[in-house]
Image (cartoon, rainbow, N blue to C red):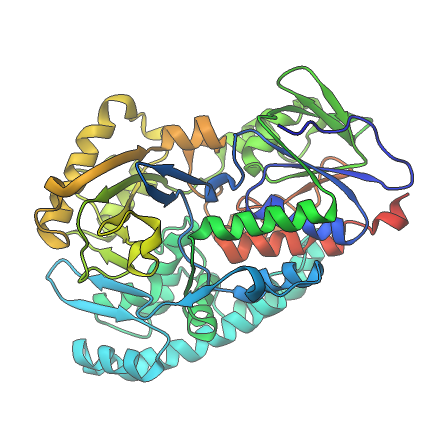
Length: 504
C-alpha cells in the first residue's frame, strides 16, 4: 500500500481528496491538471467508492452505476491528461436503453430513436402522442438550462439562485417531475416512462423537482452506453490518469476527522492516528457524513447536527449480485420490472419508511454486452430493489435472505424462469452495507433526496459554507447524484478552487 507524504511542498500546494469514487478521481485529475499535488485517501482496499468492482467465482460485478449517459464528461478528463477516451475505453451504445415490463405484461423499450419511441407511445396510448412530443420538447429546454447552463455552475450565493429563478419558474421546476409529465400525457404507463429517471439519482418522481426531466432528453441526445470490461474499466482508467499526473493513492486510509483551525481546513486525521497537512481538502465522502462525522460541530454553523438529521434522504438500495451457469439471451442488458403498485410502493419507501412485501426491480445483465464479465457460457446479473433507508429500523442481518428470496420469486415469475437452479455465485448489499462500508449517512443510496428545497443553492455547496479551503464533490453536493452529476461536481472545482500557482 502506498503511504501518503505528510509534508507539504511550498512550491506546489497540496490537496487531499477524501474518497476515490468517480467524484474524487475526477477532482484529483482536475486539480492535478491545474498544478496541485494530490493525495487521494481511500478507506477501502480498492478504488471506486459506490462504483467499485468485486470479483467472485470467475464473475466480475460492478457494485454500483451501470450506465454512461454523458460520455463527453469522461472525454474532458482524458483530454486534461493529453489522451483520448477511445484510446483506453471501449464504450458500447445500448439499444434499447431499458426494457420496461409493466405488471400487466406489456413491454416498452426505451431508446434514443425518436420515431420508435413515438410509435410505442402510439401503440399503448394513441391519444398521448401529441402530449409526449410536447413534453420531449420541454425536456430539451430543461436540459439546455438545467444541464448545459447550470450543471457546472457553483451555487455559492443566494444571488446565484435568484439569477436563475425566472428560468426555473418558466420550466415549472416547482412541480414534481411526475406532476409535470401528467399534465402532458394521461396513460399511467407513459407517465412512468417519462418520469422514472429521477429514481436513478435517488429521487421519488412524485416529490422531486421537474428539473430532472432533463434526463429523458440527456439520454436521447447522448445515448446510454456501457464500457467493455464494466464500469470498473472507467475507474481503473481514471486511477491511471491520476497516477500519471503524480497523484498518490493510499488504500486502507480512513479519514477520522478533517482538521479545522481558525475556520480553515488544514489537513486530516486518519483512523490510525496519523495527520496529513494540506492546503485544501476535497471530500468525496457523502456530504451528510462529511459534516456530521468528519467536521467538528464547533466549526459548523449552517450544517449543524440538527439540520443534517432533519434533512430528507434518498431511498436505500437492496442489491443482489448473482451469476448463472447458463446464459439468458432473451434478457436485455437493462430491464425495469414493475410490480402491482407504483405510487403507493414509493410512498412506503420514501415516506413511511416501510419495507413492503411487494417490489419493483431494476435488472442488470452486463454480460448481454460484454460476455467476458462471466465464465464461458455463464451470465452475470445484479438486481436492485429500492427500499427504505435505515430510519425504517429494518434489521438487515435477519431480513436480507428473506428479501433476496422474495426477489428471486419475482424474477422467476416474470424474467428468468427456473433460474435459481443455475445460480452458482451470489452476494447481497443492503442499506447497512452502504452505511458501514461506504459511510453513507442513514445508508441512503444517493445521499440527500433531490427535492427542490435540497437542490442547487439549498444543497451542500461545492465550496463549504462553513469552512475555508474545504470543498465537496459527489452525489450529496451540487448538482446531485448520478454519474453525470458527480462528474459535474468535480468540474465545478475549476471555478471555485484557485490554480495552484495562484494559491502558493
